[in-house]
Image 1 (cartoon, rainbow, N blue to C red):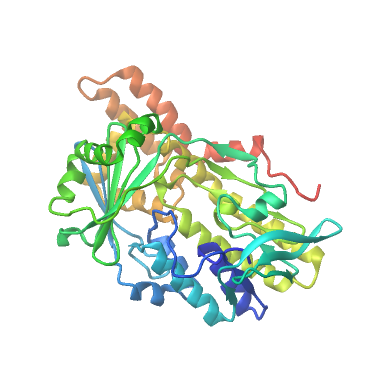
Image 2: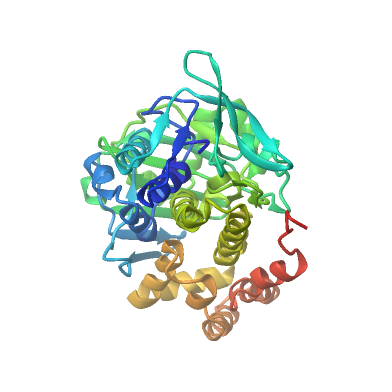
Length: 439
């Protein structure tokens, strides 16, 4: 196991619980921070529960977030979750505590975690990966042999690079950058609410997290990167001011940390399995942070990888088949969400159809719940935003006084195409099939 954070720990837990010997190598010592926005919707919290880590994670002290708020310039939609495995709340837990809790859970399950260990090469035999070479904490070079090497080592994955799979076969360069910081939260009435605001092209969020802080994430258009680079603190304050709801949320809450940034949020699918190796987490698949799916998917598909591989480790032929089925399952389950996320990551202003949807959601609690359930992954975008409702929203937008009819029609074509039964996702699957690493 290369990497012991979300995907690595989840895979290690599943393998160890199946009675397999697991060694996880990580170049850092835990607790350790990493660049991450770390919101979990109810579906993500349920995944922590599934691997037995939720008790440890909750002990860190982040508040439960049973309610979500989504607002544009005029309308606020409030929603609560459809429970997932009895979980009806989200959480925002900073990565030092979260990852340390996952590592502790992996160790309790029987996995060996070797910290400050950096992988420098792969061992191979007749084209099959059979282990790794690594530099241990004291600088000594060592080797480990294993029937499966799991590269849970992030977007710049060493395993992906060494197996020739670093270049994605499907990718999308998104239009938003990420800038975030933590503030001392002076608004107790907001401590159970994960909130998002969209005004024109701006998107901002406030997620209460552990230690009495609130994480504020701004996702401006990447086209403004130069102005941010030249005056990050000034641009942060000016961007918050462009969203009055967010500005009000932060009244009396001083910033407690420096501002962190991520400019390149290109989404992708990489070839994620081959003879003796697999890539869970961001190493194999990444979505723009605008829909906050990374940790949920890392834990879920790490766990599913471990469960799929454990009974097949003694047979290379059966293992390769199991890895291939796991890889296809992840693509099948994530592809529609990938297409929907890429659309939200374009940094466009809210369309007239979206504005009508927000108006409906503000008046209809069940619709608001369905909107939230898409983020929680208990509904597909095409299920929540059905064609029939899209047609009705389009008609209402066209009838609204002062409507720009051409803009409405263009938005309708875009919106209905993006949500009608997952059509774009299916089209992507037809046009750009997953390559078979075994020919």
